[in-house]
Length: 486
Ligand code: GLN
Image (cartoon, rainbow, N blue to C red; front, top):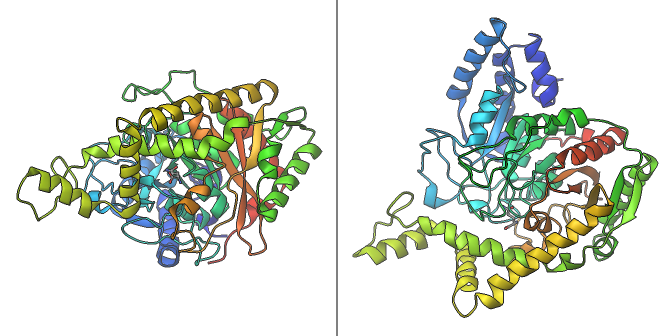
């Protein structure tokens, strides 16, 4: 077995026990990248020199007998919308092609404090808008399970690097499913924490009331470790909550007897993909066999969540992206006579089609005359969706449903009509609308051998319940062990 094939907790232990050096681990993962990146195309940039330098410092500290942290010496990849000082943060957009961040995002400071080594930045949909990573201005990332298919999105690069062993873990961001859906498409573990649990300082904003940073990992134990590293109050983010820190690894417990698992029966019945449904009901059977109690829940307003999401997310995006004016930073057009020209031409040339579509939609729903009919109405429906979940969590510990209605699709399959792409988000967006935590874990394969994910959702700030339910499932099934052959 090669070092790069190990899980995060396995490799961290080998480093700590001095069975392997940090340099050997870096060599192994970079050699894997040399081989696999050409096929998968998941990285936008690598920072080898920086990584080896950090590795040397950590190794010296370890050799002196110091504790180098829970992620001590472990190579980790970062989505390219999260800022790292003196490194590019492009958001996969021409607009930020040459943008170099002057500061570290809080999650980067925290990861590095826990001993992680950043090895590169990953590809994504432009400004995190999309479900395929195909709206990236720079390149296509392929699904390691089938190179003709998308890895999901928008954090497709971060999912693909973990799935193809090009990193032991990665960070992504999830505004409407961008961690969970690619995790599902690539058969890795992906978690979106509760809104406010992980600092967004240094995450380039898409839709601020929905965005949240979270980890991709090879298994649930690693997910708990990554959460331990990145959760915490940050005064630089006004939406960051100040709660007592939990040790999520304490909940890696196979015994879930008596746990109450909610099944939104109406929603499941409405799904069309029989293979996804089959994998889902198989998962329910696994939970039954583990002694969990299966309880039907109703999420009456969930059917409106897609429309609600695409109003709120585009409204916030149109406002957040107003900062790219060709003046302060980012791309500036070469063709202009006056100030208005700079704005107009810079934005026209610097943004891709999907981003422009969202800015137009967002501006429209916020415009006077339409504000009440769309934006205000969407905010009201948002409250109804939140109440739905609140009620459901009075009787269950977690709610489970498939992560995505379908498995990974082929390139170009859903690009003709943008709404086809939006429909893929139907099972993930409600969680962002309600600010709740949700994870996707491997739960099966369809007849094309494409992965199927199981989504586990808990009430706000109860991530430990997700850890528990996910761990018990992982330990009783084999899905997590399968790897793509590249
Ligand atoms: N696919 C969704 C969208 O395009 C979600 C994106 C995200 O979570 N960043 O908006």
